[in-house]
Every structure is written in C-alpha cells, then in structure tokens.
Length: 595
Ligand code: ADP
Image (cartoon, rainbow, N blue to C red; front, side, top):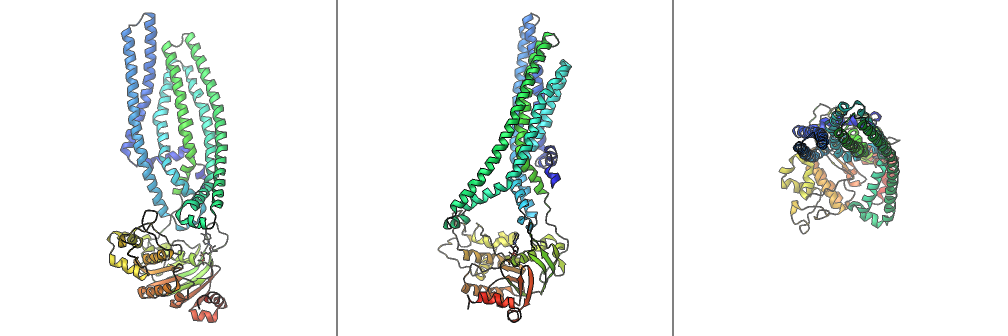
C-alpha cells in the first residue's frame, strides 16, 4: 500500500490512460489531434509575427512594399482565426469526453464495491478509501486530459519553440530553463503539501458528514431532537469543520508563500531575457522581427508554463490524493469465489471457526463447531455481544473465517462458485433495510433477477405469512404504493417495516433461511403467529433463528448457546434448562418478563 501511496502523477497517468482511452477511442484520438494542431498553430503565429515585423522594418527602410506588409498581416490574422477554431473544436471534444468518462469511472467504482468482501465494510481504512475514491473518480479523466495536453500541446510547442530559438541564436535557448525551472519547483512543493492535507483530513471529513447526517437526515433527526442532542452534534460538526478549515488554511498559506518566491524568480528571469534580447539586437545578431516575436513568444511561454503548473497541474495536485485513493480502492482485494457448484444447501458444518473483525483486539468467534442436518431448525441464543450475529454473517458467506471451515453439503464456502454461494439462502437481518421503493419492490427485490415478472399472488402470500396487513386507506395503490416519506409516498411503523423485511426473506427462493432477531420490533402476540406461520411455510428448509424469544426457542429442534464468542452449550430448550446453569440464569433473567 505504501508503494502505491508514493505513486507519482505520471505513473497515475499511465495507469489511467487505458481506462480513459477505452471510453471512446475515436473521440479521444480526434480530441488530441486537434490539440496537437493547436500547438502547431501557436508556432506558426510566432513565425508569422516575426515575418510581419521584419517586413514593417523593411517598409520603414524603403526596401519592401506596403502590399507585402499587408499580405503578411492578413496571413497572421488568418492563422490566429484558425488557431481559435482549432482550440474550439479541441475544447468541445474535451467537454464531451469529460462527461462520458465521469460516468464510466463511477460505474467502475460501483462494480468494485459490489465485488468487495463484505467484511471490508467493517474496515475504516477501506471506508476512507471508498469515500475518497468516489470523489477522485471524476478527477481521473482530468489527470489524463492534463497529461495528454502536456504531450500533445505543451511539449510539442516548447520543442518547436526551442528549434526556432536555436535557429535564430543558440544562446536564446537559455530562455527555456529560465521559464521552466521556478514554476516546476514550486509546483512539486505545493503538490506535496496538498497530498499531505488530503491524508490529514480524510477521517475528519467523514466525521463531519456523519454529524451533519445526525442533524439533518430523516432516520436520525427525530432521535437527535428528542434527545436534545442537536447542540451536541452541531458543536461537533462545527469543531470538525473548523479543524478541516484550519489545516486547509495552513496548507494554502504555505503554498502561497512558495508561489510568491517562484513568481519573484520568474520575474527576474524575464528581465534577464529582455536584457539578453536588447543586447543581441544592438549587436545586430537578431532582426527587429525576431526581437519582437521572441519577446511575445517568451510572454506566451511564461503564460503557458503558468497555466500548466500553477493552474492545471496544481489543480491535479490538490486532487492527486483522491486519484491515488481511487486506484488504491480499485486495488483492494476482492471477494474470491471457488469453482464448485452446490445445489441443495441444506447440510451445514462449522469446523473450528474463529473470526476477528478488522482492527478489533479480541475475536468475535472462537473455535465454533457444530453440524446442522438438512431441514433442521436451530435457535442461537446468548447475551448481547456473544457472537450470534457474527456467526450468522459467516454462515451466509458474507464474512470469511480467519480459521476453520464452513461447509455446505460437504463443500467449503470458499470453494463454491459465486452464483451458488447466496442462491437458496434467505435472511432477515437485525438491522433490516427500509427501501424507499413501492410495496411490491420492497418484497420482490430479494429475487432481483425475476423482479419484473413478479407474480402478485406470491407477493401477497409472502406479505400475509409475515403478518403484514395492508391498510387500504393508506395504501391506495396496493402493491404499487410507494413506501417513502422522502419521495412523497406513505410511511410504515418500525414493526410493519420489520414484517416487510420478513416478507422479503420469504419471497426469495431458498432452502436455508437465517433470521437474526426477526421480531424484535413486533409485539409478542403477533410474534407467536408469525413463528407459527413460519414453521408451516418452512417445510423441509433448514433454518437458523437468532432470538431471545421463547416462542422461537420452543419451535427449534436444537438450541445453541453462545457466550463470549464460544459455543458453550447445545440441546433442546428442556435439556439446556436441566443441564446448563448459564442457560438457566439467562432464561430466568428474561422469562420473568414473559410469564
Ligand atoms: P451478538 O449478535 O451476540 O449481539 P455480535 O456478533 O454482534 O454479537 O458481536 C460479537 C462481538 O463482536 C462483540 O464483542 C462485538 O462488540 C464485536 N463486533 C460486532 N461487530 C463488530 C464490528 N463491526 N467491528 C468490530 N467488532 C464488532
């Protein structure tokens, strides 16, 4: 990772070029042919200017006719107009290409996110990189554009000008380093400052976004208000904002200091060039035309250098950190899949499975082993933090064990082909999602490939089984009612959203279902009915239910008892009550609320 962190802009350019070129090779080539023609036109106008001034001098000396001067002037004007037209075409293609590439880069990122192992979403470093990568995606085209302009416009122009100056007087070649060096040096320094700034502020910016969300986003603001925590978040937000501004201000100040020094040196260089040109003119080693053209061209070269380094490359330097993170993010190892197909997905075996979250000091799961027979229903119980949800994520193939193996129908999850890994699995997460979609899509999204051919009866069956009752006054458009306050639709209670998430899980074709506290937001009376219907619907499917509720525990064929990441007991509810003092304590602690 460090090697990539030191990746220079030219290296990043070489990496970005194929990506950007592939967006539309034809348009790319046309754009830079016109850019090269632009460089030629700049040189021709300088030559034409020299010619014009030499003729004017001739006219004053009586050696040349007025007609010849006017012809030269007309040629100069024509070249200028042509230059503008060529510049316009190159810019037009540039704008067009920028839009097209931005979209493509975003797409690449979205696809990358989809290929990440889910556990990376627990890794703050990767979250930072992802955040910056999205900001850097549009800058990738800009990087390529600036470098292509350097290759097709600035370098050809300076090479042609070098040849031109050398042919007039070799000593005039000195102009090039005088124009070049101070601007380049200042650029390199400033680029380093801004990369550092980016690294310093990335976590702060994510925090700032989170505090803002706590204040303004719908899922947060109610609780924030009710807790009276607005001031707290506001002050956190302001503090973080100030810290970012402070770091930015310090960097800007250093950068401007460097720019001031560089500009002073450039000015001294320009005066030196002027002195040199006057002395060559006085010695009769250059003509008046050459004097004027070189002087004008020197100004042009200064301007172009400024444009490349102080404007265009500096902009890139300010975003270089993000561009690097874009590529670093693309390099984050992706989820690996195997090549073995599995069909049924019913027999589950965990062999000495251990797992630690990225950055955590203690493992969430330690040496967990158990077998689940096809069709069996297992309830997993334990105190908060004992590892139940983590276990379910590993069984679902979202996280990979650090040690040990999880086998489905005798095949390790790591060896199963991608399409089979999640096929036949369904789940309800504890932190289920409330999609701002229609009622229908909130259910059918779990069978995405068939979403457009959804059968109303099946959708209603899933909703009914999950105990979701449609209020016809509220849901006037039935399955096509939009469930989203944000987009002017209707909203649901937490319990209704939970039922909807259960319906979604039922709707998905499955042989194996994992339910993580599926009824936490539903009242106990409704809950019993839901579990009853669940068992009817379940048929011969395997099921894992993470729960505290007696209703679910009693339905299970077997109960697994977790404590501090370890499996500390297993058996039926009755056996555990008899044999496990820990289970008895847990059970007694919570049963008093229900009996
Ligand atoms: P349970 O579902 O039994 O409440 P979890 O599986 O959620 O337990 O958590 C098990 C352990 O892993 C706990 O110590 C918890 O603090 C830790 N843990 C859970 N999620 C993360 C995470 N994203 N990063 C680091 N540690 C985590």
